[in-house]
Amino acid sequence: MMRIVSWRWMGWALSPIVPLVALSGGSCVFFSYEDVVASAGGAGGTGATSGGAGGTAEPCGQGGGGCGGAPPEGCDGPGSHISTCLVDDGLLARYFLDALGTDGKLVDSGPEPGLSLDVVSDGERLNLEGEAGRVGIRWMNLGGNARVEAAFPSTATPPSKLLVSKAALTLETVVSVTAAAVEGVPSRILYLGTDTGEFGKYSLSVGDPDGMGNRELLFHIYANSQTLFVGQWFIPLEELERPCVLHLVLNAAEGVVDLYVNGDVRTNAIPDRPPADFAFTWAEPTWYFVLGNSRKAGRSFRGSIQYAALYGKPLTPEQVKGNAATLAKSDDGPGM
Image (cartoon, rainbow, N blue to C red; front, top):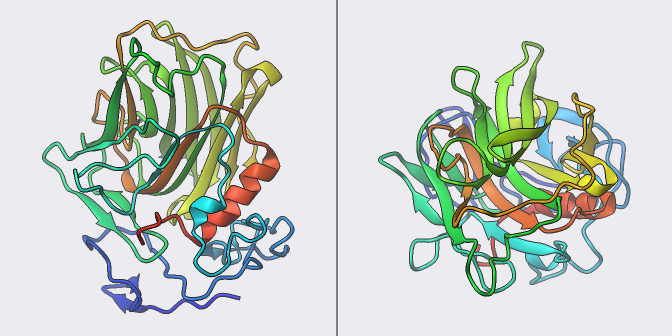
């Protein structure tokens, strides 16, 4: 079971346990977890099995979104941290967006050498916001330029850990979206590419509602300054308006391009697949890994990113469920 201890301020749920680092409005509700056990999956499942669809009034792990599955054994004991519960196999980079390092950057908790991210406000406000277990960076402006990013060269020795060639990877993030897309152009959650145009290697984007209570999620693969592949999923608005766990799993050789929301795979509206022999090439000298925007900017959404990770391999459905269940409990770093 789970207890949520909160009061309300101007209609928003606040917690007496940990104050908000910054409170600037918006429509994203962050919940504080006083008491969490592994059995807090969605209705219709236990902590050891896949949760059901659950209700829509609660975030993942509280009966909504069916975040079933349990973290690995021993991960939720006294003094443990979620980073010990998350899959490390194939991990390239991992970011807990709840605190900045002493240099003002976001620290890479993945393998060395780390790739720290710069917080580029570009005249806007990027607040650290949320409650214990749900602190992240909040973008206030739709279609703004603010972003979190790092540049890495393609010519370094040894090469950057993000310079993978096989089209086999997993994007993992905890995000909440209250508004997205400007004049029909999707907003970027995660982008890896160049600093010119919209083209790079790949991006995870969020678009307009479809008029039926869903919001569009998109995954693009780019090659030779063209869009090679687009995956499209329609996710209920209420699922994305509170922190939810997203996994994009790509394995071109096996014809797999799957999106998971809170551990559950969703139906791709576009049945096409990238070529089985597709490989990433890195001809440009400098590349950018960007959260909350594209390198071109002007592509921000309104909402928050609490956590992000990149794997150089496709996670299995079991690994996705385990990580989703872990991140449903908390997505803050060891310092929180």
